[in-house]
Image 1 (spheres, helix red, strand yellow):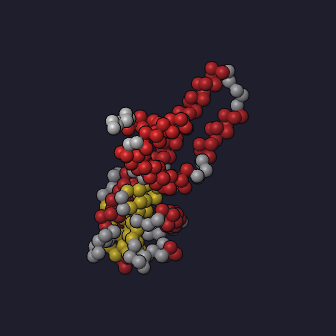
Image 2: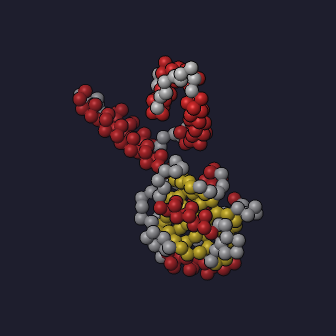
Image 3: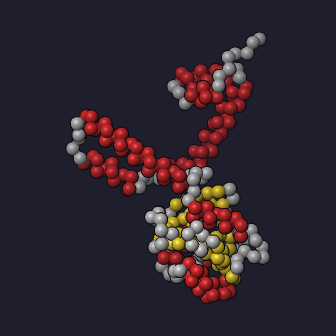
Length: 253
């Protein structure tokens, strides 16, 4: 018996996201084509994984910096129809850009800032060291603080994360993108480690942002000319709580 007509991957994808009639046609084709059925099952698994991963982000309320332009537009008099279409198109472009920037900061695998990349790379390099995870041990904290503050050109003090179960084990000096960088290493009773990366930064980013790489993730922020990122291999919410504690420890010291 001759085989039925084959369809391309692009056509299958179009039918899968098409009308109910197109989806029914795709299901009928898949019933007679095991390879196509396997592709559809694989796409369903990928969609389920993406929904599970990003549902918490999608459910977060939009920040005021995105909502304010929309609220302001509602208060303005409605322009003539031609101008209204132009304004609507401009608003869609602006919102698309903002959403794309926010997604790039939050989505794993997207383009990550150098600050987060450096923190995660440093964590991956030194957190696995059994004998030499740090250059100066926590027993010499006064010397460590003086040395790192001098090299960074600004006073820094290791935040106390003891309430979260992590203790400072020491730190080291690293090369940074525009200035030297400090790396402070923490450890808990289970042997899990965190790396707090601190360097000078003039960027305007101030919000706590998330980035991820295989085997590690980081929350990063910029405050008063210092770029900071806390990297580790912990559940995201746990790392976020630790990052907030580190932020307060640095800014309120």
